[in-house]
Length: 92
Image (tube, rainbow, N blue to C red; front, side, top):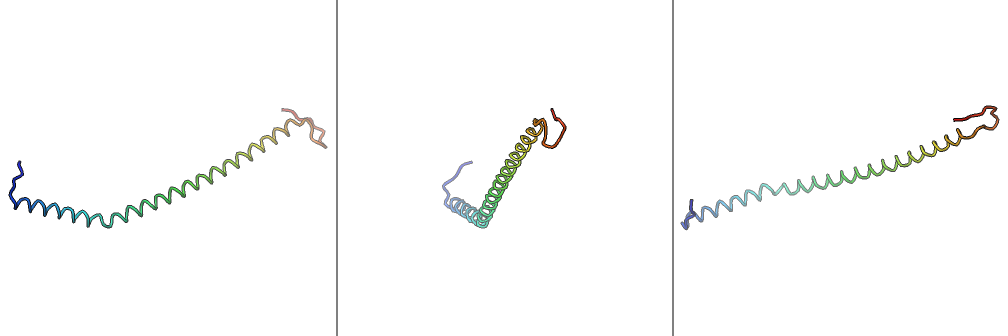
């Protein structure tokens, strides 16, 4: 299969190439806005998810801090052998 130097074939090949270029340009004209809109929405969604994750991490860090404080107070109360006004002796 060879490519001849016939001017008619060269003109037809050039026109087919231009037609392909025009069709491609028209088909992707609206697509650019679509992908950019989708990209922006995905970027915003990721930012929202990161913010929610950060808030959740802060909440659980505060909860864990409160739990540790309660545990230390509970342990201190258990170690105290007598409570004031109570005639009972407590031990582990």
